[in-house]
Every structure is written in C-alpha cells, then in structure tokens.
Image 1 (cartoon, rainbow, N blue to C red):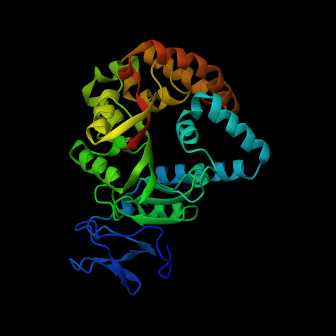
Image 2 (cartoon, rainbow, N blue to C red; image 1 turned 30 degrees about the horizontal axis):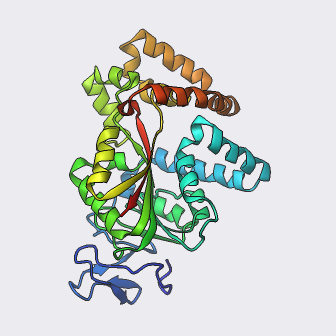
Length: 336
C-alpha cells in the first residue's frame, strides 16, 4: 500500500484494537499513541526489535520463492502450460495443495471478496484469481516479492492482526500452521475467527504430525527427528490431524472440508527431503528408498507424470489408513 492510498480494510491497533489514523507517511493509534512506521516502504506493525533479522534469513528459502515465482510467470504466460497446470491441480498428487483452494474459492466467482493470506511469503498468484488479496508476513524480503502481485502487504504476525473485526471473506494459509508454536496457536485461531466475516471461511494446507510408516521410523531417533522434522523446516508446532480438527472446532468454526495431503504414498522428492541425511545410516531400506526417490525426482516431466499415476493410489491409501496417518491436512472451516 502506497502512503497516499486508502487501505482495503479498516486498520486497527494490534494492542488495543482501536482504529489507527495516518500520521504523515506513517500511522499511529490515537488511543494508546502507538506509532506504526514503514519498513522499506511497507507498513509494519512490529517493533524494530520484533522484526525478522533479514541478515540471517536463509538464502535458500528466498531463492526457492524466486524460482517458484519465475515458474508461475512462465506458466501464466503460456495457454498450453496453463491448461497443463489446471489438469495437474485436478488430477495429480502434486496438485492437492492447490486443489483445496481452487475447489473452495473458485476463480472469478467473486472478484470483490477480500482474502487474507497468513504467512504469505513471496505470494501466490492463484490467490489473486479468487479476489482482492492482503498478505502478511514478518519477513521483509518475501513481503517485497508478494507486494508485486498482492493488493496490499503488511509486516506483522498472525497473533495480533491489525484489521478490524469481520473484515475478510476468506483467511488462508499454505504450510504455515505447523510453524506456529503451541503457545501461540490459540491466539492465532482467535484472531482468524475475529477478522472473518460471519459466514466467512478459512482454508489451510497444514503440516501435521502423522502416524504413518515414515514418521514412525523417524521418531525412533528423537535427536534426528528434532533436527530434520522440527528445527530445520521450522515445524515447531506440529499437531496430529485430530488435534488440528479439535482446535478449529474449539474456536467456534464449523467443518466444511477435511482432506488428507498424504499418508503412506508421498510425492517424489519427499523422502529425499526428509531422509537424505544421517537417517540413511540407520536403515538399509530407508537408504534404498531415498536412492529410488532421487532417481524418480531427477526429471521434472517424469516426476509430474508419476504424480498423476500416484494420485489414484494415494486416494485408496487415504481410504484405508486412519485420519492421523496423514502428514498434512487440507481443511475448510466456516465462521458461524
């Protein structure tokens, strides 16, 4: 949002929830006098001490978002690739994340509805097809990327949202909830409920603490699990699928959709990401699985073809396995 533009929704002080007002190029709360300044042009609701230390931000994550943005731009520039991507979303194992949002929000259904993307990172083009998007994230370099495609971006956390009650038609996130510590989760869910309109919906792709063959093996080595499943990916708030469901219901949401991201059958490349480390020395069969997964993941076209073939098998796997076996939840809940 430029200094002279009016925000899409009413901005409030995260602490006292009173409407804030412009103060030159910045904003302030007339009630508690809290100032809100711009950080490289982006309005920030974090104090300088709370702001993410960009100097230690992992370059690999920024590079991943940059690569993803370039790939999406390439797809959007080609009608053929756009068609192939739509087919992927509908029928491929790798399309499950995108599918939950597309099935629920439906592109072009209501271009004026307001969407809040929690932990938006560098932004996701497909959210822009569903309405006007506001993105929040504590990480400035990613917000600057998201600002190129979203209507507005703000530097803040999800625990004290700077938006008035009942502002949004949708609150969404992708791979965010597992990064929120247990101590902060209830506050986050309360804030999601507060800023949604009555009848508004919240849609999430969330990491989960799955009870499947891969997680059971990984937990046999608690020190490795803490490093490779929690610390390095930042999954400090993993919950079981049942716990995720209970938390939404406890905060007054009605369940609309609950799907599994994956159970036993994983996308090519997943086992490499999880176990191509010290885990390989603990088991010959895990080492063999990682080696096979590397081969399957080596070629982009072959990997996507395999994802199409795996999707019907994964559906059978989902049907046979209990809910808590999934290591990812795809959910839609409604504020009642």
